[in-house]
Image (tube, rainbow, N blue to C red):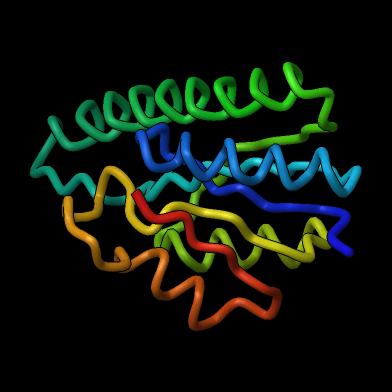
Length: 145
């Protein structure tokens, strides 16, 4: 059925719940999990000399958090004997980065939380999840918290 499952993660609690669902599904199907963390490289707007320093500090912190989120996903996969590959990518539009990764990796399912760190703590779909659901060419499983 599904052979490659994409799991976008931002390290949030709901992303961890989506990880659990994705890994259990992958194990039952003998599928591989592909993890991705999408960093927006240009959210920082500074003026003058401080802007370059602020941007570098932001990117360093964002890449560190991305590495932690992907490492958590990798550990769950390893604990369940599920094949894993993952990467951090930079895109201005997060949902497009998720969809591009699904296409590039040949994923046939996306499993993600309904909202993450950027989302409002509510029982509605976050903007990223909603756009992935709307624009993806493959099935999307939304895990709600």
